Image (cartoon, rainbow, N blue to C red; front, side):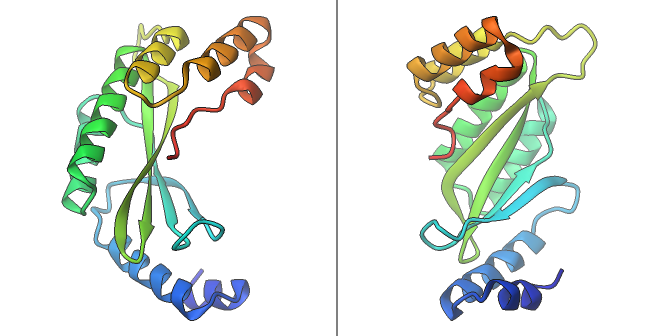
Length: 169
C-alpha cells in the first residue's frame, strides 16, 4: 500500500497527508530489525498520529529498542519510563511490546505498552506483581488493575473487558 493510495482512500486533508508523509519518512529511518506487528493511523487524535507497535521483547532486546527510539527522538524521560516498564514486565515473567506515535515526522511523548507471557523456560508470569509494578510507576490506576485481577480470578477469558490501563496517555 502506497502513501498516495492511503491519502486517496481516506480523503485526507493536506495537513494530515503532509504529517503522515513526514512520519513515514521518519519510520523509514529506523533500524530495519525493529519488527513491527501492528500499525495504525489515529485520525481522531490531534495531528492524526501514525502508531507503530513493536514486537514484544525482554531484557537487552527491549533496551536496544528503547535506545533506537531515543536516537530517533523519543523524549529522554519517556525513554526512561519505557525502560522501567519493560524491566517491570521482564521481572514479572512478561515480554513487553512498546507502541509509539509519530506526528509530523516526530515521535510524540505518548506511548503504549502491551505485555505478553515470556517464552523463556521456567518463566512464571505474575499478573499481580505486574499490576503492582505498573501502579507504583504511574502507568496504571489501582482501581482498574484491581478490577482486572478480580475478574481474572473469576474468569480469565472475560477479564480483559475489566482492564483499562492508562497506558496510552
